Amino acid sequence: MTCIKPQADMMDKARKVGVDALLVKPFPPSSLVERIGAVIPGKPGRRPEQEASASTLDDLRETVRWIDGLPEIDLIHRDILQFGQTEGALNQDVSEQLKMDPFMVDATLNLANAFREVFPRKVATLRQATSLGGFSEVANLVLTIQVFETLGS
Image 1: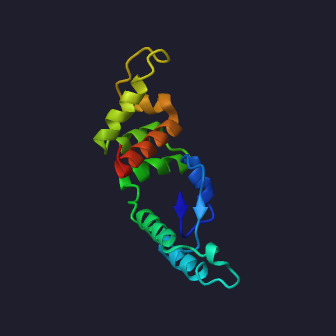
Image 2: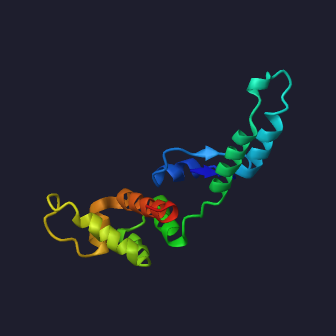
């Protein structure tokens, strides 16, 4: 996860929703390309073989354009992830938010019913599914679905 304007409690919040790496940037990625381009080619004392090639900078620019173009997590998914940061959040609250996204309802129930040997009864409600899986499992599912929707399968 990358961010341009970090907040004091951002690391804790990110860890709670399952983010294992956070890159804090003092400026947007597009500005990074400009800074690298300004420093690398004209740095005094560099040998010609050390000079950055135009294709390297073009590759970097293309990568940064791709990163800058990534969409944000949609509002419903963001709200679900924020329940993990809220003390006293109930499974009912998470279930109510999940109901806003029919695809998430289906995915959550399918995941809950995937492990029949652990829970032999069929899980029929979102409240049961969120209770069985716990918030971290729901958060992982939300992030996984968001990544697949964004980047494709």
